[in-house]
Amino acid sequence: MTAGPQDIERAVEILRGGGLVGLPTETVYGLAADASSDAAVARIYEAKGRPPGHPVIVHLAGLEHLDGWVRAVPEPALRLAGALWPGPLTLVVPKGPRTSRLVTGGRHDVGVRVPDHPVALAVLRRFGGGLAAPSANRFGRVSPTTAADVLHDLGDRVDLVLDGGPCEVGLESTIVSFVGEPTLLRPGGVPVELIEAIIEQPLATAAADDRSAPGTLPSHYAPEAGVVLVDADEVWSRCVALLHGGSRVGALVPRGVRLPDGVRRLDAPDDEAEAARSLYAQLRSADRLGLDVLVAVAPDPIGLGRAITDRLRRAAHPDR
Ligand code: TXA
Ligand code: MG
Image (cartoon, rainbow, N blue to C red; front, top):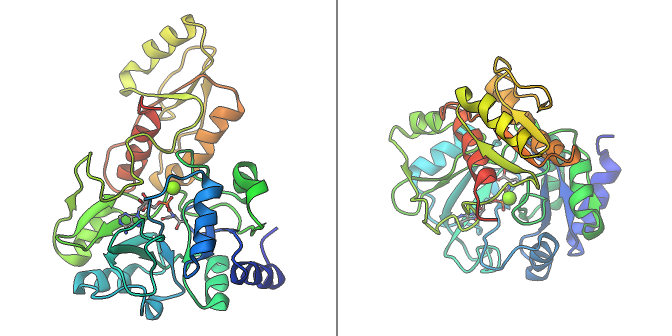
């Protein structure tokens, strides 16, 4: 049931007391704590099992709340914020005095975002300050897109989970750094093409081994099942080989691609917004179904397809 005013009051009380709240946003559920309390932020790292040195995003109620958290926001970043907030966009800009080194993982810049979800916005407005919130999953695993996912992953480690229904976007925010040339650190819920059109310049991309987005490790967003990325015309032969090897095989492939008997088909909608919305639920269902391997076809890397492809690649990365 969607969180009501009393749940929001309770969440704010918990946050003021240094507690942790599972918070719905339009992208994925966050694990929120008072960004101005290092003790509260330290609890996030502990609950997630996240190594230190990974910055967390500061969530705010609106553009007018940036004061103190950031300094010197360049004009193109302000233009993006004006056009796309509230929304699935995180801006990395020089940090202000209110942002602690724990929040930034020791860095001099901070990621800030205004989420587009009525429950998140109600909590933020009532709370008044900034909320540090990474995705509410154990480190390296698939991000949660329902309150039940959060309870499953972190139920015994959070003080409260607010239910805001399934996330509309389903993938994390797009992260753009404005420290130096505008640079894409993570593709996400806002297509890169839209950002480039608004700032009227192309985004640089961070090199694969660049540590400027320390959490964007090659292996991330990974289900228990092994993910194998293939071209559409290889799906059949790959599935047959895996079945012969004794694996329980699932497939996350376009609806038009045929599958051999014995392969469990997971739904991969053709519409890119729907595909994004359901991607993490499908990766989680692979584990619930006890699949050993998930054979997947990545969409074209344009629009939201870029973020979907990015997540599938990380899920498929062998380093884990
Ligand atoms: O959609 C989202 O962004 C969600 C919701 C909850 O807002 N949050 C999220 O947080 O995905 P997290 O911590 O799971 O991923 C944030 C990414 C990490 O890879 C982190 O390293 C990067 O953002 N990041 C945060 N602050 C940064 C900074 N100052 N510089 C570079 N990267 C930063
Ligand atoms: Mg995350």
